[in-house]
Amino acid sequence: MKTILAILIILIICGTAAAQNNINNTLQSGAYNRAHINQYGFLNAGNTIQDGTMNIVRINQIGEENISNASQNGNKNYSYSITIGNQNGYEVNPVLQFPGFNHQELTLLQSGSNNESFLEIYGNENNTAQHQIGDWNNSIIGITGIKNSTIEWLNGDYNFSDVTIKGNNNIANNKQSGNNNSSFIEQFDNENTAYVSENYDFNSSLLKQHGIANNGFVFQDGISNVSYLRQYNDGNYSFVNQFGLSNQSDIRQDGRNNNSVVNQEN
Image 1 (cartoon, rainbow, N blue to C red):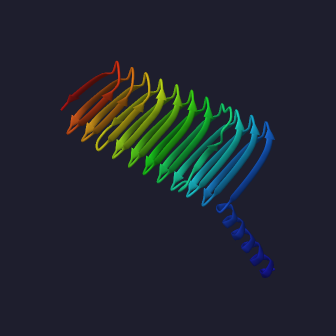
Image 2: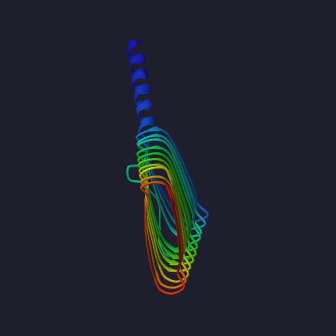
Image 3: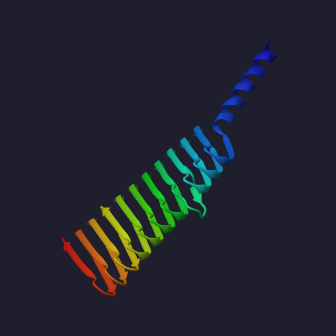
């Protein structure tokens, strides 16, 4: 009886440890595939690869030190990932989408500390959104194509955001609220619009636009904010507004029909 009881206790302990260290691998090929991954606990890892069209992947992780990887190859795919906890995804590549006529919608939500997010998109008409609330978050989006739209919203401490877009009719939005935030937005080509808003101290922003009919807006509210805005070519418009102490602004415009307005107040 004691031996059976000991065996049962060992099995329960092993099952609990296995539940806390789950690993999921999913590979789907074809069309209209659905992948739903839910992991609760800590030290979980989820990997999903989809090859085809009209695929949907959803990854939800709650705990600590979770890693989520989703790779989609095809057209009109949708990816959604949310992580709640601490130290989630030291290397998180939520979506890596390869060339094609893509109409993907990408969403990542992270709440906690020490989170990282990376998106790399090649194609057309892509939509991306990243929301991170917590500490030490890092978010990078790279887009190559046309009619792309990206939104990064970071709320917390030590956040970093980098958006790079190469293509046409792209819109990049970045908003950070917290301390020691940094933002880099660079757009290459036609009719791009970039918006950067940073609220509170030690924020810095660099916005570059290369092409025709680009628009740049930078709002900084706080202490010791620094903004650099560069526009090279035709029909560019820039507006920088800074409130607080020790704010700096440097604007360079090369081309035709460029306009620049800067307001600083201490």
